[in-house]
Length: 417
Image (cartoon, rainbow, N blue to C red; front, top):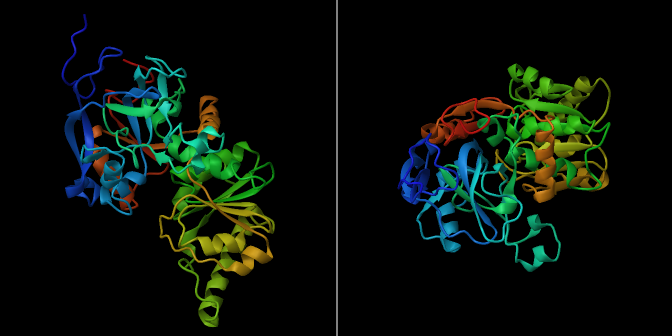
């Protein structure tokens, strides 16, 4: 009979299927809301118990780092602990993390897609499978029950064990290390839906795709997804030392946004001087795009996520009948639109949020097939999870995406040691 410890130290691998009473987790509490380096603290907490029929317990080997848990640390724009309490969670804390690689250690009575011992990655889309809207066959992304696991829900990947809905589990690519596999799913599946999920404005061969933040997590995935569709991606970045990174992924070329100063909310159209200055900057940006392409072509799809600073320019440069698709607002949420360009040129301004199971699986298949580089820029220790969120908060993160080891004892492992 296997003796079960009350808690296993980080780097120890419990016998398969062995669930200790407690685990180590990076925990955010309401009284610590603020800078991520203070908000995250390692605590020993109870391992999640009582799996529902559709749930799985995953032993986390590595976790990806995303901006949503910067917001969780700050307690803004949403108090995540309050969200958990609303949903009946009385723990009083938040365990974040919306990307994971790991091993299934337990499954609920109704789970059929994974079994104990499966090596998986976890996508972050959760919803109530009994929601009448979902049961009717509608896209669960439009359901009122949709949540982002590890942000709106508790028990994310910054702990030795995470509790997920079993449909979130996808096969881990065997050619990737635990940390590589943990890194790209949230940003990659989000980018996949943005580019493939909004017909008729879906990426296709020959399209020009303008990608904001091409050297970051979302942007690095968007460049590769566009490339795989036969499109021509052009990246926007903040410095020329990022050009080579984006071009290696498949960008035709890059634009340095620091060479322009018209960013921010659009001036009111009645202020002719201010609006004229903005339009001059937007036209210069459009010419820079043409210079990269070597011809006067506008993007069929603009992949936006900065929001407030960039949306006016995105809509200005977008092709007639093209689409500006956006999944975030890292520079602010008040995106002012000049409706003349939107309606006269019949352009589309489309919001997009993560991905459904089919889209997440389609992105993961690209990873399994070796067509997507996870673009892992740096790997951190479990103790450094607060610090790497601090880097992201301050805009000092490395190129690509970040990951942290959780239960993997060292970098470079592709299986259980």
